[in-house]
Amino acid sequence: ARVEAERLEEEARVEAERAEHKKNLGDYADAVLAASSPALRNARKLATLHKSLSTWRIALIRSQRARLGDLAGTCDDLARAAENAASAAAGVEHRNAELGDAAEALRERIIVAEQRAEEFERA
Image (cartoon, rainbow, N blue to C red; front, top):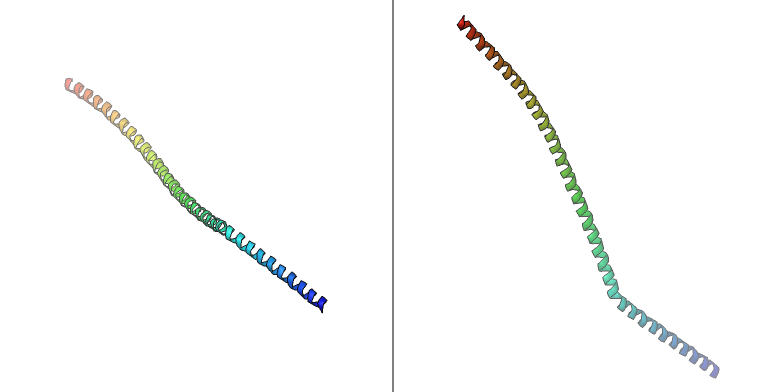
């Protein structure tokens, strides 16, 4: 009976040591979690901030691309308008040259007609 009591006492002591060890490990784990909790919160905040900034950058880049596309379209429209204006100006210049030549021809005909009129009056 004495051996049995000693064995039970030993088992109780071992069980108490295990319980104490388990309690100590639990306290240590709680302390580690408590200490790391601010770091985890900060890490979560940084991750959220990074995601928000990435989303904002993507939206900004898309907006800039759309604006550049509109700007490129406007530049193309202006280039077409400039080509049309240059073509119209060339046509006007050509017509102006033709009219200048016609005016010069009429001046020459007027001079010839005046000379003939003077000759006719003399005769």
